[in-house]
Image (cartoon, rainbow, N blue to C red; front, top):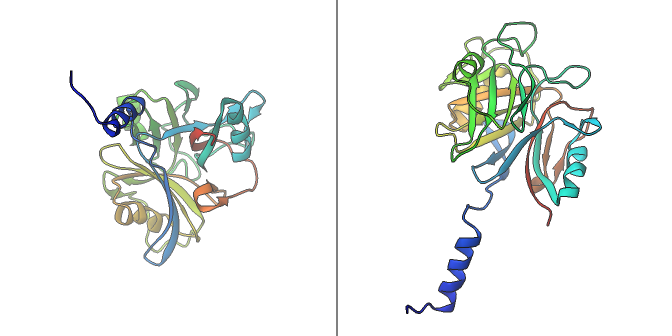
Length: 250
């Protein structure tokens, strides 16, 4: 019978008990072309979810989500607002939660940033490459199976190209937040600007600063971030859809 040293036995036991890599959530402050940004990056091992409503209606805040997770022995480790919403906090456009469509996909143009086509969908699905940002018509045609999905607009980066209607000289400046996905779908990077920026500048940060070929605008002005790693918890008025990573309470 083969004999194993004690340390080898410990290593084997850990391998059996921990078949998946540890969660890789990383939040950091960075800059690009003189503008400051805060980013949070997630990988396949992170438990990333979308949130909107609980038993008593829309959560509205990061604190309410955290409180709802507590009885399950869980907590938020990162969160951000994740799409536009109506006055009653209902999602504008597609929203899928735990595989159930709560609001339908919208492919027509319209007023505001959401209707600045092409807009798109951020999808979280099963597998080793769980993250997808896709233009809405492509998403409709391919119909990927999403555990969670949120629609917003406009797209920031589409296959490595900036949205065709963005202008470098635009004076429409706001605090903005969005999400970009790596070409292989293994990384999703959420970003919020520290200062007011236009769409062109924000999109170039995702493409040229982060090297991400597809990125989606989530919202502006109301943009909020919860990042305990950075001792940051933005407050403010109630939010509709939110995205966040979940981990066991320590």
